[in-house]
Length: 392
View 1 (cartoon, rainbow, N blue to C red):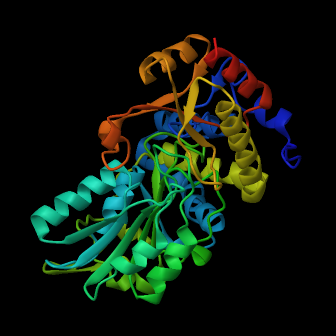
View 2 (view 1 turned 30 degrees about the horizontal axis):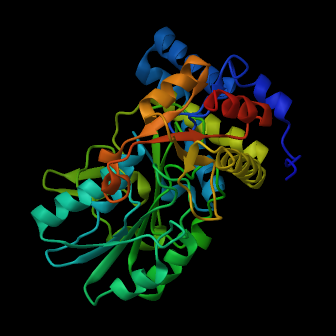
């Protein structure tokens, strides 16, 4: 397996502060940002200090506008279909609760759904009388498409899918699910929290009505940032659960109108510096190219997966051939927290996915798993070092 050659790795690592001082395999938690992202944030914070927060925001209108056009390029959509939110969960909630679902309406999701999303589905089923079906994964660890088709009822309204699970690195068949949703006229909400920034995302090919994500993971942006894509052609059917003076126009004492675009889901108050930083992170990714990033991440993810699988004392949990940069595993003779500490002591960042946060998957076995997640700025030498420490 040869490494892709389209990425200037030396330049990218030089533009990623401290990546030579540590091995960062926690990109699915929060990636290391390019220096330009941090510099853009600090520059705006300094401007706020110099001239005032409102005044700085006014001066930075073009940079804020770039947030929408940058994401439009990344996702192959229109800037008017993009909203800035505080995080991916807030974006998911904004989309889900804008649907006018009534008691008895049916929702389909999968057993890899992100914990916060699934808990909100359970909460809504309990308190709003919605019906919920959870599709089990097939033997390859991806949503069973035949079971999905069979689960559709006359009262089915929505399909929810997490593109790359937080606790498993198998990429789910988002486009195939989109084709099924379109065939049956269903809403389709895709959580791309772990895929945005490492997988090419084209909302037209995927066919989703909503796509949400975060800035801090594979997009290499700031914490406390997220985004929502909402399809223009269906936007007028959506009624946000909450509004403020930014998301609506107050026409008279007794009337108002929703914004005509996806910004109807936003709040007026936001972290402007972080929004500008996320726009800079997307621009950085666009300059490298989504296809080049995906090739590099998949190559490193496969190398990491196979290197772990070759270790006699390691259990690897991914089962499909459609792997992302996330690999989950356990060392046979050590619990997940001790394994994380072993790696951290050697200067290697990883994370632990908790069984309690994946009750339909890991929770069945009462299992916590180690999660290593590589990005395009990581190297083969880092993987070799990681394996050597893990085997020590």
